[in-house]
Image (cartoon, rainbow, N blue to C red; front, top):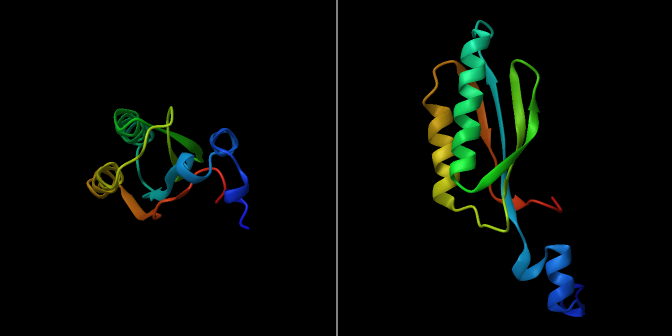
Amino acid sequence: KNRLSRLNKRQQKKLLVGAYQELGFGILFQFKADTDPQVIDSTLDAVLSLVDEEGATFGGYCNGQLFEGMVMPLNRQVISAESRQKVIDLLASFAHIEDVQVSEFVDAWYD
């Protein structure tokens, strides 16, 4: 038997597996070397605001030039493919960002 079939619904919910699995996606991008710090701040604000509007949260870091992390569901909401595409489109709209990478959906807790 596989592990999931041995778990009851309460255990699945607690472990966030099966019907309770939460999917998110990774993002990574870099600011061009000459990007003004105020532009970096306003860009990060725009990205994080969009993530919030889509009912998600972000965990990660920015070291001044490189921004990397994971967009994850908030309060057991589901992140839609449309929400993921909105993030991609927003990142593509900034001329001062390069090397944008957005992953496919992955398990937010176990991948």
